Length: 177
Image (cartoon, rainbow, N blue to C red; front, side, top):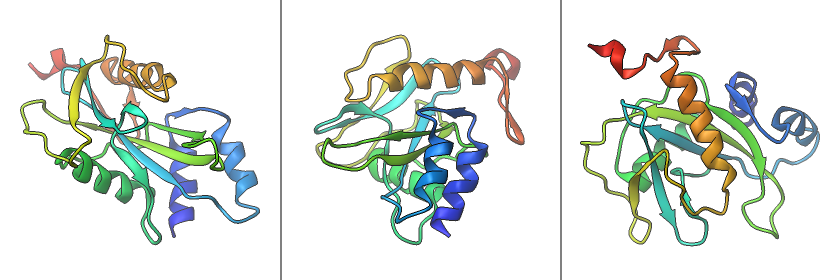
């Protein structure tokens, strides 16, 4: 169930990095390494991203390991609540699929990135020692994965342009008036 859900979402993802779909096809031939899921949260004005200050990785989107029997989508939603205290509806189509190593001594891991649009007026909570914060998308933030900045910005630009993301069409804030 977990792997089937990961494969289905990987095929649907709006953006693909590190040739993740091909990597996944090869990885399915043997035992799979853990899967990862995260949420790219932006505010309704599409000017900020919600990040968590991880102890070693710096500022990263809320996310983590997909637990046995859990789908990547449900893992992303769970991690969002655990790391930020926020509950939000994930957009129907995954934002991205990628492959990365989270530590030098770990095998590459397939990661699915989901997206949510949540107001910045909602109080933040989360895990002790890993504070969440809204970061201006134009700012540079320190991260073990600096490529995430451009990836998240590219995805948010798609949202601001009103691109269809699956069955859901996200309109820029000026269309809400």
